[in-house]
Image (cartoon, rainbow, N blue to C red; front, side):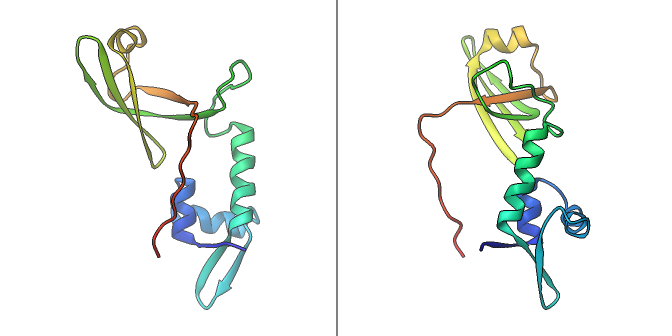
Length: 133
């Protein structure tokens, strides 16, 4: 069973360490104590994340009318445009998302730094890596 430190779980959830501790206290996350350290059960964390994702509480995204299921809501942090194409950068929780779209689309959507947007992602190839310990 995978176990995560409170800080690791907080980073994954995009919340504070205190929020993770509250989730442990209210029973939303299972944990074990190792001395003074709280270790979060990885499977419990996954179940909590799935529950939140299914409820759409955090995202406010209605995915029932489209085929793309990988969606992240966030803030536009930077837009770099030329005559034809624009690079739009977003922060979705702790994740940086970069999209290349037409400059016409940026204008039509009235995207600006600080705009709330939804990144819709559909990939044919997803690569995974592990952190070095």
